[in-house]
Image (cartoon, rainbow, N blue to C red; front, side):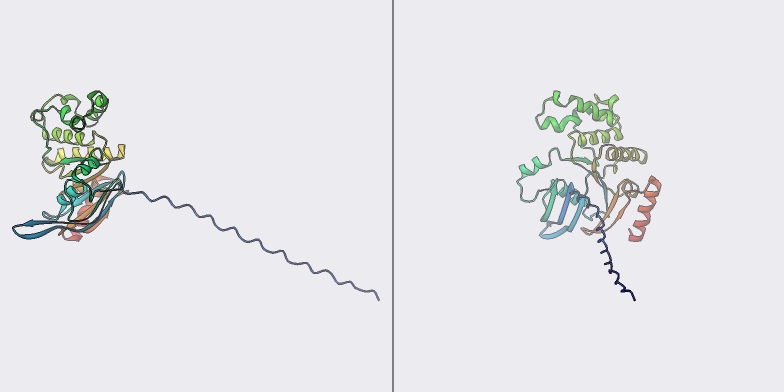
Length: 279
């Protein structure tokens, strides 16, 4: 009888550990170009205190278009003035390009605002004795820049807003729409980080308002211009990527329109949203 040699037991190969799934790196957070933190603004009138803003916080991303709506007396214009450094909050902070404006002197705020914020107002605020071109160039004239340093930029901006044919005319010689175009050109001429518009179409007819809003939208889309407007008109607000509703000094709601195509669809979305709010 032959000896049967036992077969060697083969050890099972250890399973290789599965490689950990690679995680996609998170996109870096985009710092807001304009931000408000817990803004409060109080006014003393006849011995009594009126709170125009009551703890407002918001962030505006670079290249975005934000519309602010709300009833009269809700604090819309007050918010715009605080965001632009035209007034100081009672408490809270405003950050422009990451720089906190609170605590700065008036001169320091002016320097921080210069070249960073452009303003467009309802009533144009043009200098009547200056031509269209001279009104547009005014921010850099005040800053003391030499005309030769901005001549090419001036021609570019005038053409951009469609005012080439009336550049040498006075405000009294052009239409309301052309005056507001002049005001917009003046606001964007120093290439600011953000343009703030306080009822920019409030003094214009419907057709001219659409032209002005289309121009603002073109500036945002073609030149990545950050825009914030205050308006009572839902159709004007619908040009924004985001609409904020302000009531009794507080943000009570907002709607995102970014990615929604078609002006009519955006306007319907805003109107439906306002109806839900009972506004």
